[in-house]
Length: 538
Image (cartoon, rainbow, N blue to C red; front, side, top):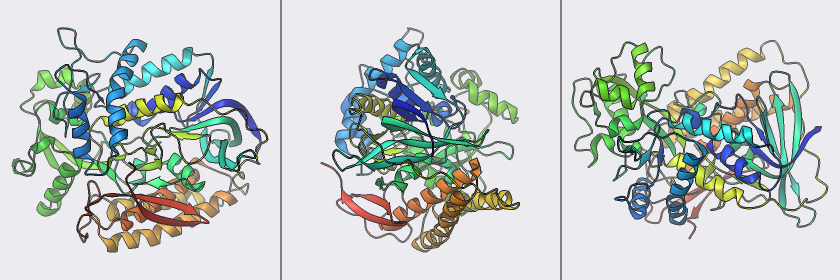
C-alpha cells in the first residue's frame, strides 16, 4: 500500500481523547488526525451528562476515589483511579481557559450535578450538551494550531506494525486507511500513533451510541496481538427513550440526579429497597432491575417519573432533552418518560498503562477504546470524559522516539475484486445478525449456553468477513462488519471465560465470586483467540 502521509504523530479519532492529545502532542512536532466521518461526530459529542471532577470545596478526592472503586466492583486499579481523580480538576479548568462554557449558579460558581453512584454533587456540565461544548472548544483550538491537520472521512483499516531493527521489539509505524467517498486507500507513517477511536455500542442492536461507534480501534489492536482486557464488561445505560420513532435517544442520568424516579407501568417505585441510592444506584444494578421488571411483567418499557422536577426546571436544566421529548408529544418535566436500557459504554478495551502506553512501542491509546483500570467492572457515571482527558494528557507527555529508521512494508491493502451483485444484501443481513446475536446472547443477563452459541456463530462471521475484506474492494459496511464481528467474538469469549458474576457481567449459572478479583486478557494469535485471567496490577 502506498505511503501517502508522513508525520511525527498520528491520531486516530477526533473525540475528547484524540483532540486533547493532538493539542499537547503538537509541542513535539506535526500532528495528523484521521477521523472516519465529520470532525464533530464522536461519542464525546453525544455525551449529555458531564465530567465528574472534585471542584467543590466540600468534596474530597478520597470520596471520588471511593465512589469509583465501589462502582467498579473490586476490579479498578487503584493507582489509575487516584491519578485520574487527582489530575482531572486542573484539566477541567484548562478546558474553561480554552473557552468551554459550563453551567453556572447564579452566584457564578459551577453548577455541579449529581449522578448515579456519586456521594456528592461533582458533575461539571453544560446543561445537557456537555460533550458538544467540550468538542466545540477543543476543535476550535485544534483549528487554530498550525501544526495540526485533520482529515475527515478517513476510516482507519489496520495498524502498521513490525520489528524495530534497533531493539527487535514490535513497533507501530502508523496505520492504513480507506476514504469511502472516493474508494482510495493509503498509509500514514508516524513516529508515534494514538488510538482514540472511541467505543463500540454498534456491536449491539440497541445502543445510545452514534453509528460510527463500531469498535474499530479495539479490532485493529487485537489484529496486531495487543491484549484486550476486561471486554466482557459492557455498560448498558438504564434510560434510553422508548419510542417507535426515536433512534436510541439517551435520557441523561442527570435527570435522576435532579430527582426523577423509575416506576413500572403500575406506578410502583421498583428501585426502592433494591439499593440504598434507589433510582440513583450504579448503572448495572438499575439496568438489570429494569430488565427484570420488563421480563417479569411482560412490559416493553418502564417509566421515568419527572413530576418532582417540574416543567420549568426541566426545560432550563435539560433543554436538548426537552426539545426532543416535545417532538414525540411528551411534555418534559410533567409526563412520565418511557425508557429502556441500551448498550452504552465499553469498560474494557486495549490494555494500557498509566501513561496510555500499550505493549507495542510507538502505540498509545486513550479514551473508551482502552482498558486503563479506572472503570473496573462498572464505570461510575461521568468518569469517562474525565479519564479521556487525563490519559490523553499523560500520553502526550511522553515524547515520540527518535526516527527509528527504515520501516517494514505497510499492511496488505484490501481486496480489489468488484463486489458480487448480492454482497450488499448479505452485508446488511450479517450486520443485523451480529448485533442481534450480541443483544440476545451477550446482553444484560447471560448464560453459559447462550455464550457458547454466540461464540460459534460469531467465529463464522469473523472468518467470512475477513475473507471478504481481502477479496473485494472495500466499503464502509464491509470494513465495519469485519471489526464488529471480531470485537463481538472477543467480547463473547471474554464473557465465557469469567465464571463469576461481577459488575456488568451477570451470569445466571455463575460460580461463587472470586475472593481475589482478576482481569480477563484476550489475545488474537494466528487467527485464534486465547483468553486468560491475570491479577490486578499492583
